[in-house]
Length: 419
Image 1 (spheres, helix red, strand yellow):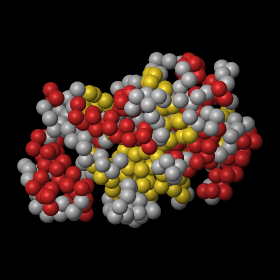
Image 2 (cartoon, helix red, strand yellow; image 1 turned 90 degrees about the vertical axis):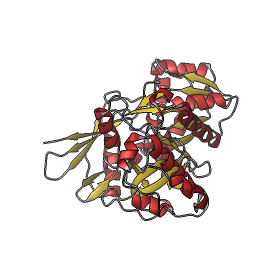
Image 3 (cartoon, rainbow, N blue to C red; image 1 turned 180 degrees about the horizontal axis):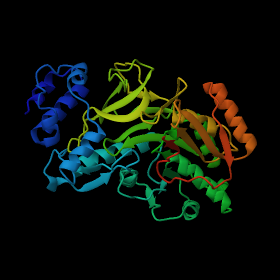
């Protein structure tokens, strides 16, 4: 099935032209989407609204199921398997890991987008980047590592190192940029102090974070920048399935700018699946415009964002960044509670360190409780702030420093207890 490419010349926008080209290419050789879109006809797709109304969503569970039936890589491959040269997989934090392949051409898109992220963060030739990243099979900072080399930077891989050793390597090599999760950047600074290392001598001027929402949370950003002697934090987010997605607006901290050349974004109500009004919270849906050999079409990311205002020009902006995950939001006595909201208030109290939230579902009504490393007085202050902000009493138990798990990659601070 093909024919979508014939509409490119008549497309009303470059984005629509890119979507039609994507459909044309994918439906010529991608068995997964040939089956999924078998009833889609090329006629009538004359606008972005038509695309959203007529093309079905894709989900991670569909890709995982397809790989289970057609192991090991599934059928979402636009090229012959011999053309693929890279394998990554999701971290598996919300279910079975998903494998994702790239050809040299589709991987080039990932690297190019990371180059743009770094340029927007003010990173250039001569910078020395340290990647506090294990370089496992998940996508993580693999593309960023190659992009930094392309920019003429000195790159240092921190895989296989202890936290203390990483801190020493950063100082000894006069690294100017740190790349890691926001949680680990804070943990790294804490560990450096425990080792007697003086971060006032650090040359770090930029911290590029990803993997968690913390980089766009004001209280967390302030704390992290203070811990690293005033280094500027730049947020970014991406996924194995869609590659790099956003970079932080240099002029508006806490606002993420979509890499529009590579993605078509929609925001939907996860319950009704209808478009979310501008300014309201909904689920981010992405279509990859250039990573054609391993595409994701109307992919439900599970990320919660504020729907951007409709604008005929200029980039798509997500104010407040990634607010959390659809499957992480809980309703407690009629109040929507998001992980980022809890994180904001924990990080607003400098005396508190790592924390963990338990969602207790053993009673008819959900209950939350928090463990936080810090003093009893700080725990009581967090209780007070949460009550004032949410109108809920959430018990906070103080625990000793080092009791709760530390995370190098995505933090798993929320756990659920079932009946």
